[in-house]
Image 1 (cartoon, rainbow, N blue to C red):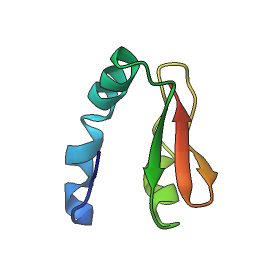
Image 2: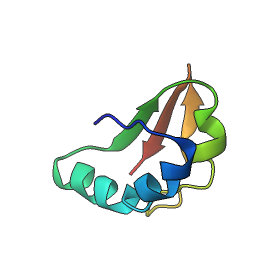
Image 3: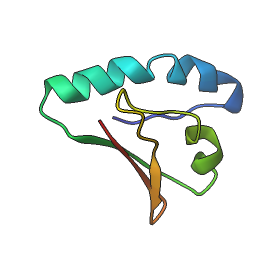
Length: 66
């Protein structure tokens, strides 16, 4: 999955986060990742999986257990 756009478009993308999580789980995934620059940390910090797990910074790769 690739995500790009302008800052004003951010809420449009995050509104679909739970849909992406359910799709990943239905396809046997155990985590979701965002690969990007450090600035993503600010945007991802409020998102949590259904288990209450946040994304974690791993080499500028953000991982969320689902």
